[in-house]
Amino acid sequence: MSRRPEKPGEPIGPSVGIATRTRPKTKKPDMYKVLLLNDDYTPMEFVVQIIQDVFHRDRDAATRIMLHVHQKGVGVCGVYTYEVAETKVARVVELARQNQHPLQCTMERE
Ligand code: TYC
Image (cartoon, rainbow, N blue to C red; front, side):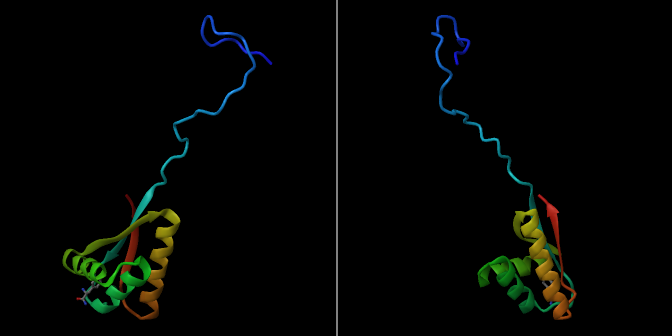
């Protein structure tokens, strides 16, 4: 196979070459914040434990997040792709339900 020269004067030759696409065709996934909501009844220790277990925060970070939610009413526990965020929300909701705490957790597109 021969090809049309790309520039005047360029010799006609076989169409061979290497892929040189430098722009990735991938696009970043939408990210979702997982939010914890304050309430008057869920024990602080339960919330700290949930944040450690579900969001893999150490005890200090978990305590900071819990206190932020306690004081401001809502706080971000982490930012994830849709399915991961959905799974974390479901785990928190289920643990709260099993322990009969009114703790609420939700997600929101970033
Ligand atoms: N406000 C609760 C209390 O005083 C503690 C709490 C913190 C509850 C964070 C929920 O997402 C929450 N026991």
